[in-house]
Length: 515
Image (cartoon, rainbow, N blue to C red):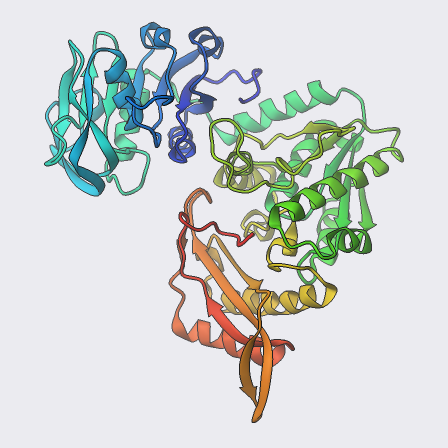
């Protein structure tokens, strides 16, 4: 949960295990209202302790009639706050209040034309028909007593329901996804017409409250900040520095897993330009020794997470026994590491990869923010565009892009290839259109021919994706001439590579990173 000291009006998103839960929260925040994701096991009293002005019941993969399916404290539906059920959330609401939910002979996935039957409340100001995104196998076939059917599709006669007296609403479609072309307005109608929100969630207010909270948390004690030079750690360093000034010491660990020129960039930007107290630790040999022979990506992440913490603990002893470690954890890190109701996708080194016996208390000011919100904070803090709009780089660095065993030689091959990729993408004017673009080195070799000689060398995979928040992503349709230049340069300039592949997988089912 978010910091209880936040004073914004809050809409709680009650999570039933859907990856879309984070997208719901993000859409609410985009509308200017703070949202907080809570587990479906929350009690009515715990929910009211958050003082929410409304709640959203998320979708989920279960069926309401299955044994062991996620439930909801029934008292929540009688709290008097506006509640919007989405997909499974609507089905559960209907089921709990006496309606009938059944599996349907025709499942409904993808776009469907929604017909609005009641243009009040959720559908106020929206045309009578629009395209909505469906993803369900069960449907409400009989609404609870005193509920009206407010929308339908060809295959789903009960696509939305409402009980205005109890301020309970449900939609079978997903207004949070961009494929629902009036989804933004549906959410805003719920927030502003039904919940009567004021809309006080801004990055300016976040910065003020967060810096106040940091000061209260750390007092007058020293703080160390894990600074990598990426967007998240840079934003964290700036927030903590604004809050406690010279109590902050930034620690940059050169673990040998960074991109070409990265150590020099960090020293120049934060040490010289922003005049922060910066300590650089050369730990390449230490990390590579621990990672020697390791192939399993989860083990890699855990080793890297533990080594980072141990280094910071050692550095803390040099700074009046600093008690706090600031790091750039953001919400997708938490979600993918399997925190709360979400399934574990992979352990992020700064969440699931942290050792249990840490000696430092964490300061994580960005833990509840999505990447796009972090960038807005960066702009407010005056960070240069070069940092603000920099593509995400995984905390474990190239360790999770060199698939399989890690050696200095393999790392250098990938560094050179990745530098070429970055140069060509920027030269083509495509960098700003992409969420991420990078190379992956595979642990296989293939036959090639160069100068009439047989080669047996490694392939580089080019990964380029577009996304809004990293929770979902689509592969980028790069122009053929750009792909050709990247391939030619890598094969000609990087010793040990004779083939370049292009990854055309979306997330889901794939993830953005390979490990």
